[in-house]
Image 1 (tube, rainbow, N blue to C red):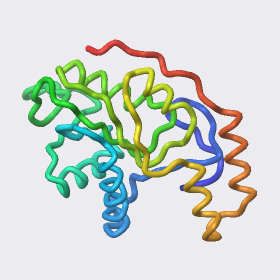
Image 2 (tube, rainbow, N blue to C red):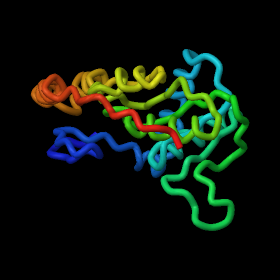
Image 3 (cartoon, rainbow, N blue to C red):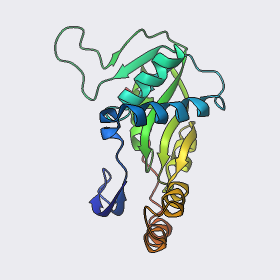
Length: 194
């Protein structure tokens, strides 16, 4: 978690940036984080395979998949222009339910994009597991797309933990709270699956 002025993927400015990409450099933290994700899996009914949103969620999805012996699919950001030219790697069984895994969610657009690709392959996407919900519109956007979201942390809950442990002060928490109340982002435009 970093504080300052950051431009998010959607182009909006934010006083906070949450990035889980470096977790792979800290194996104990990586393992603990995936253990928390696995605990959350108990709340999620029936799915057959996992697919991480590229790229930050891929190491998280891979570890959750391996630890639980749940098959995994890998979505590429771009279709290969050689070999099989696949956009999805792994064994695709049409009609199977896929749980999408994401690290941080703001509007849900990356999950929806991934869901559309998977649905285009004949898979069913109804649920997503995210590490951190920034609480800015993802839940409602995903619900509108037929996806139920399960999060390990909500941003304000995470900030409370950091504040309670004197990592950040209450001024920072209040600043982010004000930002969130002023920046409940617009719905994501529904894209057609290919």
